[in-house]
Image 1 (tube, rainbow, N blue to C red):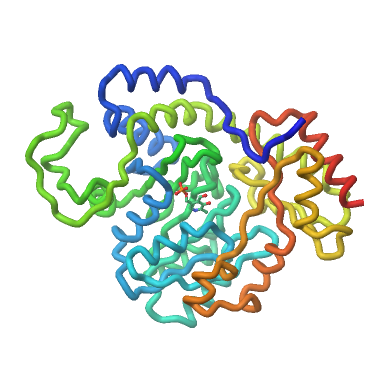
Image 2: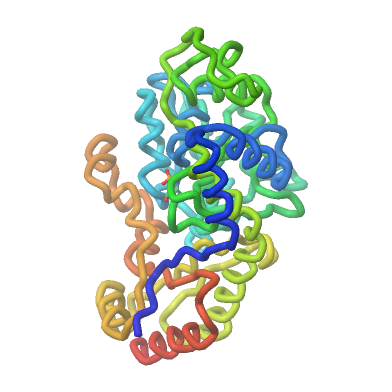
Length: 387
Ligand SMILES: Cc1ncc(COP(=O)(O)O)c(C=O)c1O
């Protein structure tokens, strides 16, 4: 028996919608993409959605459309995937790295405030809703990330690669910010194979993203969604990108989207099983959920092996693997990655929480197909290794 770290759940209608695309004779962006965008925007409660071929593409388009320019500074957390930082470099801007909270691994409003007070030239912030839990975006006393940034006229671009469907308070992530980017990569909460979605309520930003998503071609004369097909004449108004999502991917996404809340509830079942099954094991720290449990997408369930545990994190991973359980690590923080460490002279001492997390962090399997027996076996294996 082997329990893999990740397994894509089939929602049911994937083949049906794919067949429709294959039979339509139009594989690239068309009616399936349009429908996916409309349904997604309506679900999260945003005015506009733009489907692209990755979350990385969405983040790139978002910072470009938000007006971030070469030489500007953009705050990002170190506890994230490299995509969050690399898009800043794509346009010649520079990341400013923030530590995260130990308990939640999220960028804290307090930490962000200190960075904004210390640095001039910060144009944008990319908070990451790590693991599927929303950062503190807005509060009654106006001390959330959006509150602070709006006072400082700093743009907020949300990296919601892990956060569909995630709520902050009673609102979905994607409904209340400036611009929010989701991932549909194979291991994400819903998938299109590769893919992403940018959502916003800002019409100007949306129009820029639509143009830059497809080579900078003016939409006025290149509208595949009007039923007129691809018109032969078009104008290029900017050096854009080739980031559109094909209908083949949108077909899979539409099927997965139908089951998004069911999938979330199944991942929540896994998370609650772990919370109960692991809470009395010494020497591990469980993830802390600051919001109601239903607000979390539970993309990840990361535990931390404390330094006083009988085995190191690396040994723990090996032993779990020997016992037939796949795990992963999210993340080796960016201050430990050669490029960022050297380019920005980053020191581990400046990121004490991310450093502590990194030394001990292990992500456990979380996906709808995990049975309670699988979860029981995983908990028993962890108990055996750590006692
Ligand atoms: C936090 C975060 N941001 C961005 C991305 C990029 O997503 P994609 O693979 O869809 O480009 C990922 C991918 O894992 C991620 O984890």
